[in-house]
Image 1: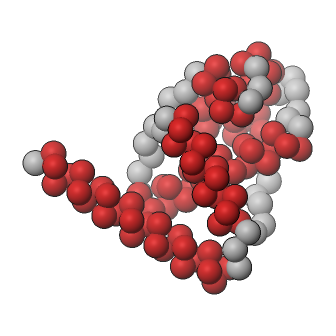
Image 2: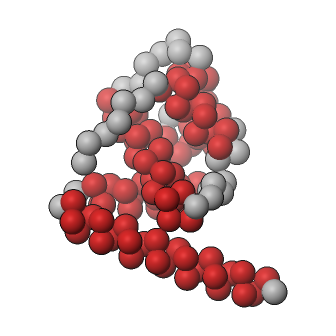
Amino acid sequence: MRMRMFDYSAEIKAYRKRQEMTQEELAEILGVQAKYISLLENGKRSPSGKLQKKMEELILAEDLKKECAGEEMPATNNEVELQMRIFRKLSRLQPVVREQAVDLICQILDMMSAREQTKEK
């Protein structure tokens, strides 16, 4: 899978804001200190290769979630970690299999969303 290029300072801050997270919450997910997140967001530091990969996984997992759900929803730390694990597994699949897996995930999310809407009524 080909990764898109990121402007890390802007992407990190934008991701955090979309997820309605504090720097502390994002730092916890990424396994770094909140001060480091601040330095990254302000362009005073560049992320390590390992942190770049984690951030790309988070953002691409968010893209997958939006593609399936058609909406942005704040995620809990557990949901974000699960999204990262799912994306890592998907990225290892052959393109055709990955596409089928994404379709299946989207169907499951649609069913879950429909069930939640039914419960609310």
